[in-house]
Image (tube, rainbow, N blue to C red):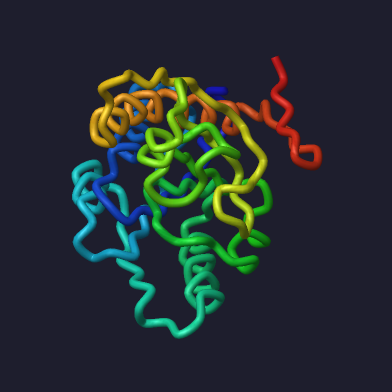
Length: 206
């Protein structure tokens, strides 16, 4: 891998950026042959921007309220990502559903992580949904993004047991630890060229 240019990753964020930090740490340790080319946030006060700036990563505040249509916002997002020559787009707590404008610009090259074992409990408050349903196991899912809500092809999943006394906060904290490992592993598979998509199936080469 040493002779190959590192994969350029663009990260979209809306919040604190713990998954962003985990990705940065693994890149800097040499575990993933990539670089974060830019971090884009639709929230000017997202702490993820501070995390990125600490590592010298270019940051862009790209607020959606300035756009009347989601497609217009996504078109500008694509333009920003292309200007940084991004190969892979990561949604790290980015709280917006993407339109076909974005998805078509990066086919099978946009990843998201969701705090549940999809297709169960998509959307917001997945951890509370799992607790309300009474499942014994939850976890996290890394998937390619399509225009639905957490409906794209599944790349990796990690199971996290649900304890009887769990609250949304305690379950979320344990799932988040799994997210950091799982997201990094999925990104590494992509960077190393080990992923192929056939229909809804994601095939991983040994």
